Length: 509
Image 1 (cartoon, rainbow, N blue to C red):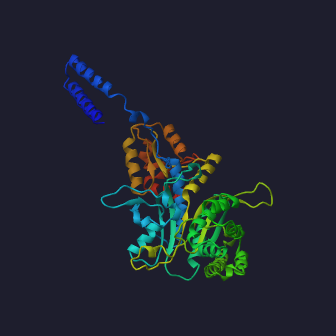
Image 2: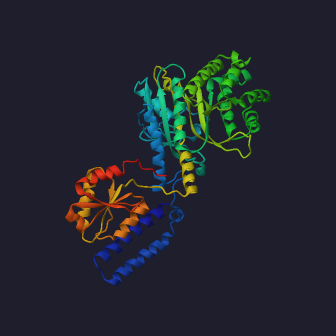
Image 3: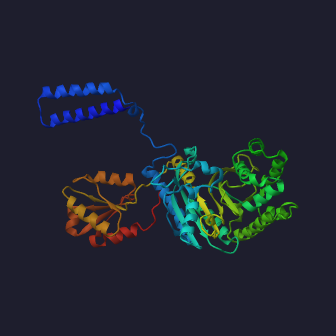
């Protein structure tokens, strides 16, 4: 290794010598002689295997986004953010990495997916896995007991990516959370309302929000005979029921996690049930479950939740599903997950869930983990699975072959004759200063046809055309690209006329 490094240094020095001789315009013979030495040294060095193997690509589980894709993403973000703001949320931000101990022990079996960084000046750091744990740390650090916030940022998971289904190692989360001591189920119901509003606004298809409660799950495990030490690991098995059959889940519980078969069968009797408020009332009468304090509390809160969801007009979108477990350790109460539904092939069949697009729940104990005195701040929140949504919207636009605008330019400043570059520059500057989104072509004398074609390709709705006659008359010819109608507008009225014509919100799809 040391010999190769020494040889590389000789190659570098000889290369500099050859370049120096060329700059000094030395004789051809001298340059050739030194160049021959350089080539001989390079031959001794041999091929650089590292360079040969280098492949220009993004890291596994990540991707670049084209202007077209970013236009779709921004549209989706706009829908989400406007909903969060409509519900009175403030925005915060936190570092992309946290102290490793901040994240340790918060994610159960998923902790193995955390990206650890090398020692950075005495601090062991990890990339954030989600936005919820950093939020809890933020509340504890700043001694906050009451906030309604949203946070949109990238998170990182050392997962096996399935990018065609919107599953990445680096991806955005869009979180909304309500922290504070409030009357039961009012904030929880609002979170579910927000979830339904966003998914309806995005028009990505029919969806169903599954709801459960960790207290009901824990009570159910207790009455079925699951040992306390196995609650969380059995919980993560149950959470797989949306992807695999009950038999496979049971085999994992018994074969891999050592649960008694009869206990697994009792769990199966419960977790294969789903319905509405009638199922809640049925379980309140269950002879075993109704005797468990935790389960009784959870069922009571769910009954109240369904009352509020009915008032919000979304109870038809909600299903009480005993198989919903949500693998993360920090949930303490109500949990929920929204899935897109696939239309059944045959009449009478139930719609199938084809993927989670939003999830969340109540986590009343997380902030207390960071507070020196263990003071708890009740929290409930939701996260929109935007990467999955982006994939769906992109596929839909591809199928429809719809044109997507990648800029918001309102007007192109064009010229009808040559030698009008200065006038175009003056006019486009006036429009920029007035807040108009404007462009011009970077040529001194572009052809008018080329300028109009550019507008059609880029979806620019208006063209402000300067001509010699217009300059004499103090007007600008304003042309609608779609209708090809032209009207003369006094220069001093141009800004207001453009604003009037482009006051409608721009749509990208």
